Length: 47
Image (cartoon, rainbow, N blue to C red):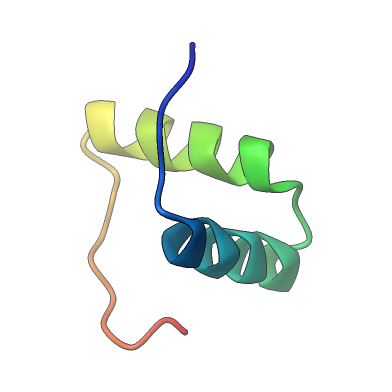
């Protein structure tokens, strides 16, 4: 699967992934999984 993401958003994703100790692609996969399984919880001011 390919998706287009703004460079600034990708950098933020990479920072979040690093803070979780994950590769950014694994981090994105986990977000998608949590969303479709209803486990995604919104947090404000993550970065």
